[in-house]
Image 1 (tube, rainbow, N blue to C red):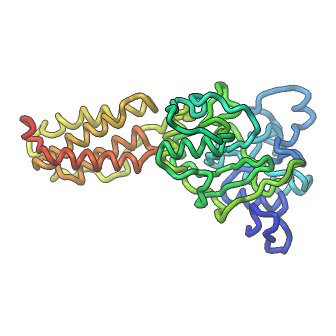
Image 2 (cartoon, rainbow, N blue to C red; image 1 turned 180 degrees about the horizontal axis):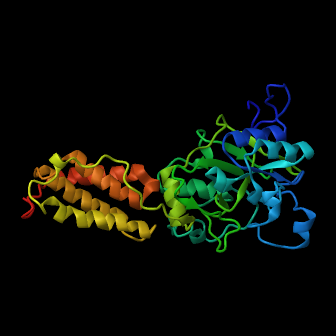
Image 3 (cartoon, rainbow, N blue to C red; image 1 turned 90 degrees about the horizontal axis):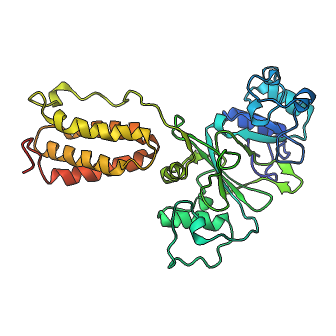
Length: 362
């Protein structure tokens, strides 16, 4: 739909995008949608029966009957329901259920508020007194600070992904979860408050995000920049979400999609390199039980270094070694594949300088 995200960009019919059209477009992307109250950013009210008696969404007959009760729990991609909902109330806004859409949205606020102590700006990261914080005033500044500390681009400036300016001056940075088996929680509405940074929250499972073009009493949610679709969540941001407690479900251990190591590349003598390398690979894979604090990098580096020495000594083919290392790393940290490959490359190179002769390194 050409007009998504900018009220001044006409649709094919020559008019600004209607909420109904936006809802249909979102559903075509596979994003479940639900109505927002007219002129507001909150879900449309429940039916009279649900309002009268509070009850959990699970098992509510309204959802089975196709009524838009319980906010994002009612979200759907069904065109017939979407037509019925917005056809009956064209002024409803559009909410997108982040979990069902596999979206992770970085919610940057620009509220006027007292700036906290420097060691509370980035959860878990102490900020040295030498870092100049003069002028820091909002989530835009703390997100830029986090990116700078990690030597990464500022997500607020990421033109490769859908960004939506909010009526209050904030920014929603939409990303697609590239590893759907790994689930992330919302910062807001969670049992224990978590945040990516001061005035920077996360919308993911258990929450929703306001679709662009939605109009509220405060203004319109407007797309910013050229991108109309979310890009994959950058790996470094995924790592930060894990570090700050946003991960709620670890990826299950699954069979490797990589080709099996050919028998011709296995050791010449039984109990050769496996006796050395398998325990190290096992330590790497076991890090899946701990999203942080498991010394994953050190364990993968040790396994890679040992594998590099085995390759240099002729006990193991390099491609087979790389496949084994990558499989173990993917089981433990599937959200950081690029970083895993980098660790493996460096470790194999370092290990190759000292061939492992099974009786000991040369």
